[in-house]
Image (cartoon, rainbow, N blue to C red):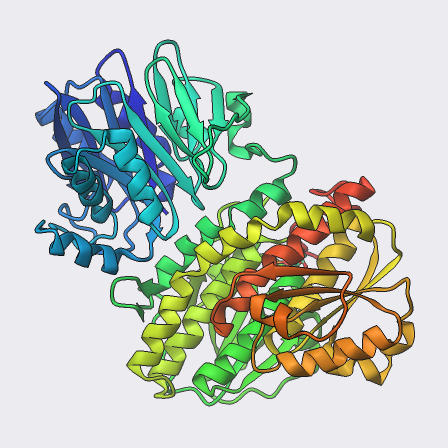
Length: 608
Ligand code: F6R
């Protein structure tokens, strides 16, 4: 996760770019830079390390341009050096970028084949070169940027500055956030409203797929099909900014939409994107090869993340996992082998049962790993290995982005464990990490199902009971779907392993019972179809969450089939979380419940 900012101004912009970057430093701070236009030529200053280093550079070499872009970096592709610091530039274009350009290797080859030399290890630099090549073919800057954007795959936000164009910035958003600020004869853009707060309180949040032509006196926004789009301008109150809902009606929806970005950010903490390998950060260098077993425990949604983790550790690393919900684990008197490792998963890091289980394991000689979202929490402080999820503050009581970030961390750990234990080859690791790198894009795609899901939610809001089914790694998703629906819409829901249906719950099925089946086309898909047939034969109404191949092969009539992108099976639990969350969210909105603060619940459960 990086921070980006841009200003088309009437006074020198460098000091203000720096000011905005300071407000974005929470998004990353291993290098920073700004680029402006002086006498129509691109000039830039960049520095490794914290912003203060860039500030010192700008003291020594002040930049006088009236238009510019800035960046504070959190390295993904390429080491945190000055060369790899943004803005990346050619003679004609400078670019700042937040996110991942997945197909950068192919694009680098295309650029080299066109005779250009790349200076850095980053994915970002390709954008500057592609635009430069398009300009050289005679396209104007806007057309060159549009053509280049169409070539990029991944989830990202970009700001682009051109030589000779002192009244033009291009902004683009796909998966990563970007806001445009309206000033008096000036325009701004930034990763969030906080960055722009000193300049304006009038903001438009770009929607996914949008790109914009930003000039001093006008902003034109285009949607992903290139059609000019109208986006609302919101007025914000500076004191509310830290708890800003953006364009969203609830924090929960905002947090669902943040997932492409925060998942990418979390993944970047555990993998080397360029090398396609797991690189556990300092403080988290776990020796998985030396383990006989792994114990895991958590509560609620975090427990369901652990349940998916169990499948990953056992399948990818052949590492047996003892798993239980923390309120049971703490009293089960689990016998734990010497020098074992226990992993605890918690958004808040304060959940009483999870903490008690941690202390039980500590007393029984275990090393402790904690996958936590709040790094200063008790669970984090009491751990030997702190494994942060970089989801950012989660305000909605129902956990969404923390869940997918917990899953992302577990997946990276399981791949690393698989490699260390010799169960995965280097090639397997590369393929799995590549699949993980593509998650943000699939998450963005899954978010596009929102309108369809809203229609479906209207029907769900009229029923009293819902059943969720899934097999294999989709079973925890069925449990999570049922929990999400119960806790925010107050509709009774149960999640079952699909194969368990005939052992009792099938008695509940009649024509009033919606059955939501989570079933990507994977190796257990056919088995799940058999279970769907059992439901259909009894008049149950099936809502199927699958992909194209699954929709083609499922020989069962459904009330609705939601089609997700096709993806490698390993990452499906992370992407399928999105429709499950959106379905619960919209059902709750139709029910008129307090979505962000549902009755009887608390964000952090510090009592037993
Ligand atoms: C459900 C939910 C809860 C939490 C559980 C554990 O949406 O948020 O089930 O997952 O209370 O909380 P943490 O992760 O803070 O330990």
